[in-house]
Length: 82
Image 1 (cartoon, helix red, strand yellow):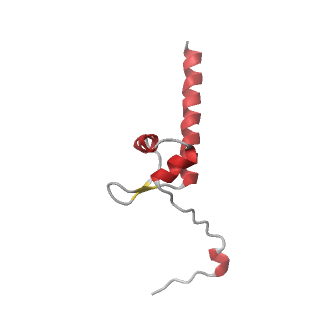
Image 2 (cartoon, helix red, strand yellow):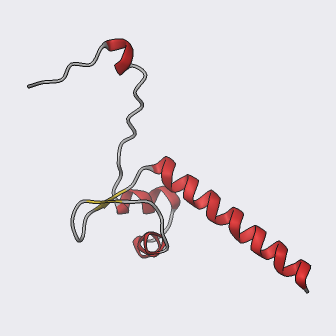
Image 3 (cartoon, helix red, strand yellow):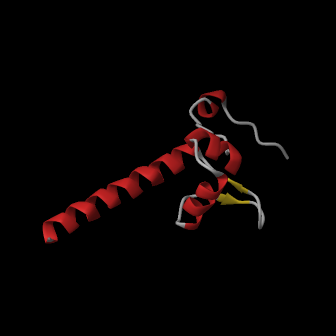
């Protein structure tokens, strides 16, 4: 059974490619170890097996922006408390 999408529908579907850990590290000019650390800190990733992960760049960027925003709020709250 094959599924055929109507061209009008298909043109509106935005499919973002998944990239590897090494590709993500190159994109951000970071080490693979840093990417692994980010993933352990909650960065969104798709896990295919125990050693293979893939990432959607838009999700990672959103996660990093949220993380930075939280850090700035905490920093501001700390300076107010002093």
